[in-house]
Length: 353
Image 1 (cartoon, rainbow, N blue to C red):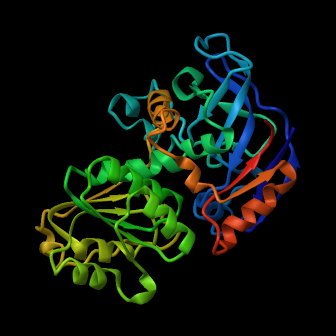
Image 2 (spheres, one colour):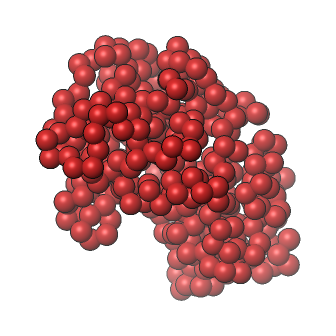
């Protein structure tokens, strides 16, 4: 089979590999559509997870099952499925402790394009098929289904980590695809005021559709100063960090009210330490909580999020700005995600109907 791979840090291209073998609890899937993630950019060009050689990239896809192991009960060849970006080992101790995304070690539930070949190939392997796959509702287009792999569950997890409650004022830092889903999730959870940090007009317009009330730009000065100015110095109840770098937490802590929570789902691709301002953190005693987490995977979560889209309560198509047809355009879509033109939110490559 062919796959688009990271050859080494900074270099990528098409390679030939053997089709993956199917274990007794596993599935082999062919993609119907794949999406490009900023994480692919961090991995390939920034070397954020270290050197990888000839590793097939990608972790966002929907697909059709072509083979299942003899112990798989709920899926069969021909089934169209949702595939989460995070595919835990559900019999692990970490899963039993409630942190399946870290099954086998920190972040080890993230297997695609990290520990094993990803989804940018003619076929890919899914471990623990009954625990990780979900049936794709018939009324969800494959292009939209790709948003359920990572963008929706990650953005919503930021809302969960920040513990957004009815009536909360919320700051969302970064309104790329993940941040947009954090805006949507905060709105669905009952936030009374959502302030979004972003600059690209296409993202601002999408954020308005998802429930953002006000916008600020980091280009206009420090984020904290702007937020405190428009909140009359009060700050916000919750902060979701979906963009920025290791210094972004300084602004997040400064604007957070005592007793507030920060939910981080941003992939910090560089830097050695996170900056936390001592005084604004209450010299360590301000009851300002910082939670960072990898999105949960699993069939149950995928089914629930899929039902939000299937029922019409969540329209993920606002995330999709570019659709390409066929594998020949994969590299173009990947480089587009790296270069981030002004009209980009999310590129998707449709493989077949």
